[in-house]
Image (cartoon, rainbow, N blue to C red; front, side, top):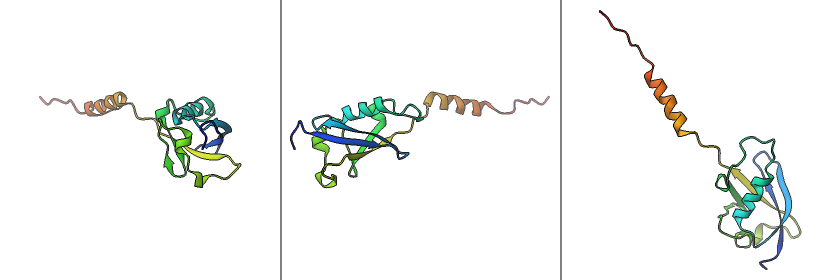
Length: 118
């Protein structure tokens, strides 16, 4: 595959909607694709990704690595000539805030009886 070849991609979100299709250079990195996904993320969808580390891109059952190019990540057997390649976008759910969890645990522990019998 030529490094400057254009590839048509669309990104399938968990709810079945798509971002794209759009044309990308096969020399583009997976990190670049993730940045584009974040920029084009639908504003009406809740819990969107905040950074590229919140997204996993899957093509033909393989999780794509951030530092690899699109040309290095493609699997020719999964492509239809002249068609768009659909990649699955998996967004990591937001992690609970550890500080808030500790405050909730401490408040639960402090509840108790403080009676004194004389």
